[in-house]
Image (tube, rainbow, N blue to C red; front, side, top):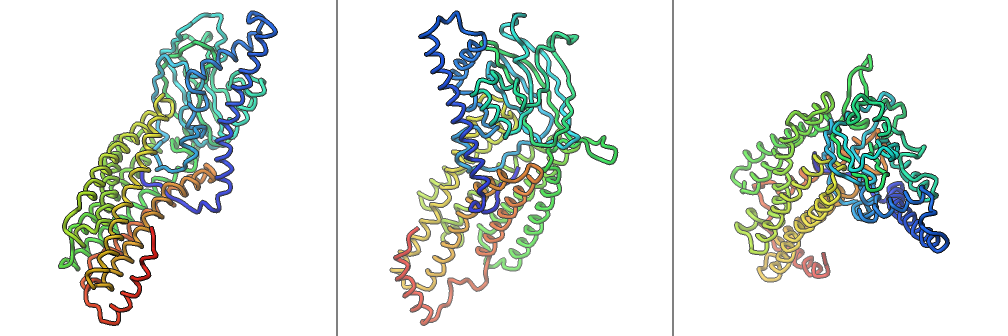
Length: 516
């Protein structure tokens, strides 16, 4: 629910190895499809299609269906198999709460449908309630054991693909590396053949993804499902914790950072009061950004707290989305306004600066719409990957756009230093904007890339560390911005003696060699 961030990519050899594994998943599955195609051509030259084994017919049909859908691995972006999104680790952290999920599948023929990922302890449980099950082809001759739900880890999935390549299995649910939850051939034993309820106990602690597999060609499935994953906690082991292992401390983490921003806001109000003679409009805007960030964290803390105890956000997710949108818009707007020098350097915006604002604000609207769709629909939605790509593209564009005003201000200050005779003043301004330019780049890189690397290489039991790292980086950025652009009684743009002016003029001569 808040901004993401983290530690050094240079030390993340484990992250690079995992990236290679994720890309290899796509590569290996493509090899499977190519080998299947070669086998088919050779088989047609030797024998007629009527002599094919039923096993190979299922493989061919499934291969045809997967081609038509755009390859089954590409549909499983939640397992890190999407090469476009995962190859560029540039993203914000999504809400992706572990609340009770209600999903509706309608006439879906995808061979793999991933649902939520959850970190289980040895006391983990899954409550799965599926109703209104219908098939486009309900023939009793079909092998419905090829349809069902199972759990798989990311590491296991790589080996499952290898088994498919080696023709050891024809369906992922048949692998001995996955934990089968329920297969639809058992529906015949149910009181109602259109629904079932199951409580699955997880005794092996790990992070698993709940997956639905349909390996019957030309069979579309419709159903309504409710899934609730939780770990039992407490002295008697009877208290449910709906937050994934490694995220159970997040309510306290978010509340702690809320208190930090609350204190920061109080300090900023005190500074504005003490220096009220030199306060500009931009300083009140900075206060608004801090307040919205604090409210966003408070809503996220309450959201996680309710989900942890009840499995539902009880409306706090709506407040989170509202404040997340307002915080995102105001933060990017603030960076643009500071970069232009608005209010404290000049009382107006140039046309090109207004265009940047008019581009960033609508893009933030799109980004927050994408965030809501991604969080609420879950990875089982057919357009889930598309929305992730939209969010990625918009976030990249926004992060790049806010840098342009800072670059323009630096260039304008360098040009002014040559003409207005105020070398020392302009050198101070130039140094300040250069520092801010570097800090903004570091903030974007850390919260979008480094945090993702930490999240990737960290054990699922310590996923909260990536949240802490991201929030610490964001807090540091807010503090730096407030300190560097605070209202000052003795503005550094004021009295400069002749010696300082001459030294600054010499320094500015060297500035011509500086390039952004």
